[in-house]
Length: 346
Image (cartoon, rainbow, N blue to C red; front, side, top):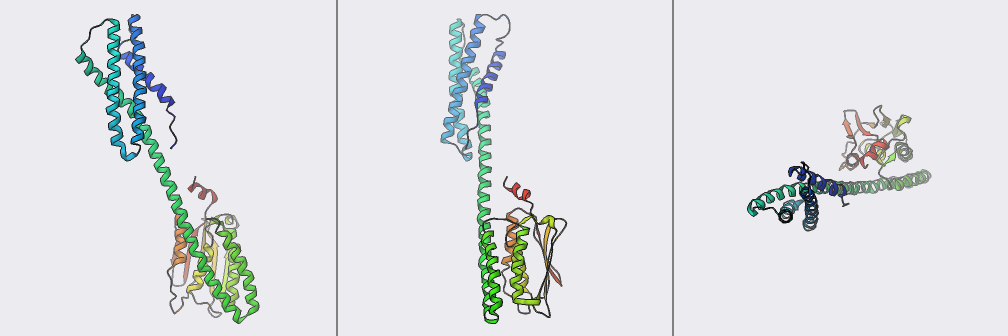
């Protein structure tokens, strides 16, 4: 932890204590004679010694009890040693001045008065240092908590992205295997498109976000692969406002949503699956498909949608909205402005 600059405190605090002490002792009341000047000098030396002694004790005790959970011990030991040290210095200073000036004094009344004064001085000085130190600990704790949270989010984010790649590969290889047996020419075209898709896939793993423009370029290739397999059984409509092309979203969001629709719905020439991708005026991306669920239920852990929801949640973005009616299945995700995303980590 970076050390706080205590220089200003070492100047202002003793000066303030000296002024208060001199005013309390009426050192500036006329006449100003040699005795009063000696008193002023004696007080200045004593207070400077007290301040530096307390400061030394504070930093020494802090080395042994540095943590916020050790606050009680740190304060207790600081008070004990500081009060005793301050008492000895102030009493010695007063005795020396009285002896030098030839004054008589009561050792009992002197001890009581100086002991109370010592406690007050220690509380002022030690309180200021402890308040600053506790604030430092609080700032450090918050910073460490933020760094830990960020590391945890990054770890979870990487884990979620890792779940996407095997799923996509499995479906792609199944499609390719089917095409090789039925139509080698289309299979060759499929391989070309698949390589294009995987170039994007490999590149997308390098970042947490990509632009909507990149996602759309990718989804065009991905849809081409699907249409190679399903033909006119799959219809798509993409209507995106150009002003949102440079907004961002997690990579492969569109792929997972499209794949989810394909996985759970009947796709046939007589009953085409209709996909619609469009943006809204409030900056959201909507993926919608007509609902024609397969009669035989498809096993699903809802990994795709869960991944999407988790990724936007980890990025502290507005909620992903999922709505299913009798005829349609609709997913709406927020598009992220670059400045909004940067502010998360600023």
